[in-house]
Length: 65
Ligand SMILES: [Zn+2]
Image: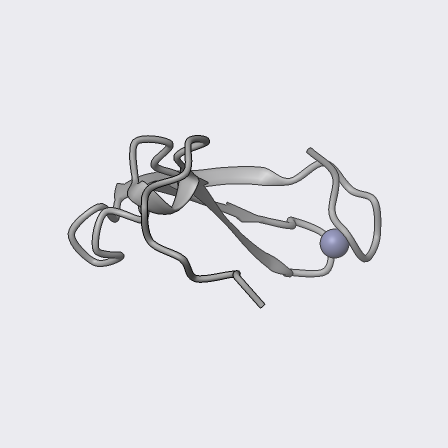
């Protein structure tokens, strides 16, 4: 994965469990750093089991206009 700003290959710093911090919306936070310009990149991997990502429609009518 390349840096957004200088296109240098990012250095992986570490992964963190964020399921509790994000109310189960995301499960993994991956942190990467650019060794060139020192940009910091965080990637939140979504929890596809979370109700917001379910494909099927519940009987909640939130977008009925
Ligand atoms: Zn960079």
